[in-house]
Length: 462
Image (cartoon, rainbow, N blue to C red):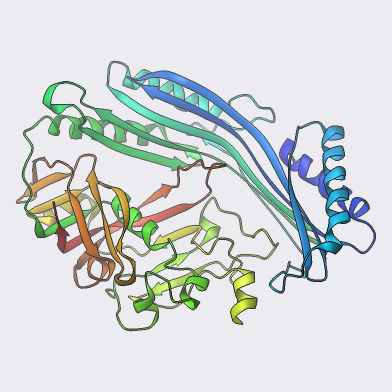
């Protein structure tokens, strides 16, 4: 079994935990690491390269319903890291008896093992990840193509690439390892002169294998959009308009819905923005089916307590609520079965496709607003599931199936129940895999696989 340095670190530390914690002690060790190359492009050139290489372990000791934890940053030197972990365990053990009891505390006690390792490769099959901290071959292949094909363009982008690892071991024989090597790349073409300044067309790519042909196609699409952006802006009407939302825009709305919408604890406390759907007062279109399936994503199949995530987990089926993301603490508090969730948000949200040919989206729209992406989303009325936000990046006014020209950013304000309910005319038969490019604390493992949506009516307010 091939192991890289992250897995070797995890194995070494987990094997040493029984002796450090003491005979019969309950413990768990959660490992989180990444070796990420970050590259910022501007005007088709590299402006800011960087590399982040770090590993953290969260050590947890338990005694009855008492528990204490500490996060330790690892140096990469085995002897030094053993000292750091040993000192952390000693401190936790001394303070544990004085802590109050936590009736919601639990960890997985049924022994289980899993190992998933996905390497990154370029489209020619070159292995992308090496066992040191240098940029991987996969990242270099991306950089070379981007620089060669965007020279002379006002091209802006941010690339993140490299392995992300998760590990979980505990005193009950639970032992899981998860490592996914991949990339996320957001990029755009801009107009930076005169009255066109600020107009841009944007695209993104995400995956474990860099596809050179796919990038060339996306770049050619951006070139066409960039040329269309040079036309005079069209004035879209306010009020209810016919609209088509590209997958990235649909994913934005689904991401907003995930802020408590699929959380079991929020539903039990009756603060979910989808509470009326949960209560059966309303339903969505029977075209809407949504589920969470970490098996087909970058996300790990286990949570911080060592429980396996339910996969697939059905959330909405044919417009009706059928499930929620539930973590073990919520399970104890409300007496419901947990799904192995951590933060009670979908990790790999998937939405069923429809029957509209993806390439015929504008023709299906006919006349109306063609929306590539959304911006600044939030709830304008959480209890009514009414969402607001702005259009952004190459939004078109379409007439008779042809784009007439760009539309300056506009605000929408409409209920999710209407957008994905009576207002939904159809979904595309193609879906886009969209990665979460956030890097708060660490690179995210969340993904979404979603179609585009044709809306018979969508409310614009400015």
